[in-house]
Amino acid sequence: MVKNTPFTDKHIALGAKMAPFAGYNMPISYTGINDEHAAVRTNVGVFDVSHMGEFILKGDKALDLIQRVTSNDASKLTDGKAQYSCLPNTEGGIVDDLIVYCLEENKSYMLVVNASNIEKDWNWIASFNTEGVEMLNISDKTCLLAIQGPNACKVLQPLTDVDIMNLKYYTFVRGNIAGIGNVIISATGYTGSGGVEIYFEDSNNAANIIWDKLMELNVKPIGLGARDTLRLEMGYCLYGNDIDDTTSPLEGGLGWITKFTKDFTAKAILEQQKAAGITRKLVGFEMIERGIPRHDYLLKDAAGNTIGKVTSGTQSPSLNKAVGLGYVSTQFSAIDSDIFVEIRNNLVKAKVVKLPFA
Image (cartoon, rainbow, N blue to C red; front, side, top):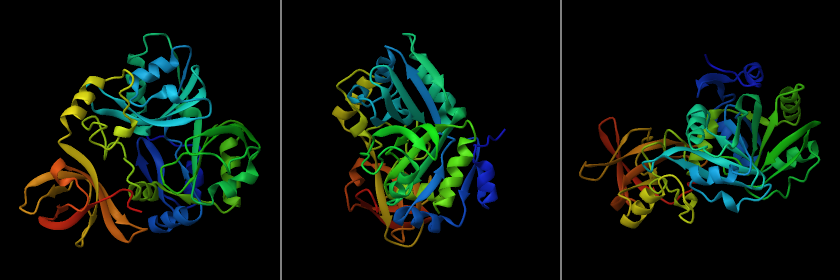
């Protein structure tokens, strides 16, 4: 059974192209990916990302549990701060990437996980819960809208009673939006264009009220197609494409969220990997010759030897050129290295570039 979000009927009424994604009926595009992408880069757009998972962890041992299962150092979090992290598996791969929100220091946290991994992540974290931490899965009753773009906070500010114009990156506040109370307004998002994400419970018609108010303010609805091109231009990883159970955080360029100052799952494996040096690395590349890289296309050297594979690729709407992410043997990972994408049995030239692309 494909699930709906509280906004599904709104998407259909707006003429969105719908498709199943992570078990949900989701909007892929409304007016076209390029048009929606440009709206977020230059103005403001709203994404329904209510398919994402949210867990609450509460109690005296909540932080201890989070520290054991995540790679980043959650002890640095104080009330109102959030942190990007990942859940390493026992082999040093990645169960999922997530955001940890500190609701009450040392007492209460919200973990936001990928939609396709809700059950997997819940079971994984629960398997380490040996100290009786209270765990609540609030995914099904939580709405999540990402209002993104350089004008997002300016448009949203008149609807709320808290200052969001000066909200620092990866911090959050609680307040009212359009008369709906207890909304978490977070300066996070996966577009690289600024803005906020808002979490609220779908009670008392809250979803309809907030969505309709955003439409009155001419906030453009954006589908998952543009969400993908926006995150790719920033070089942000998508779980299942660029990182997964077989890729380590160090290989995926996530060494910055891997803190060896604490104990966590697979710490010893990742320390050993860091000391020995990784043999493959996730890189960004842009096409020199004509062609669009796609997921799982092979990456080769000039002699035609396989050196890796593409994990994500697209025609960048902002740059008007084809770009991609992929794992390559470390010796081909330096900026300006020439690599080749095998497209329909042809070797199409590309070069490794610094991220973000845009």
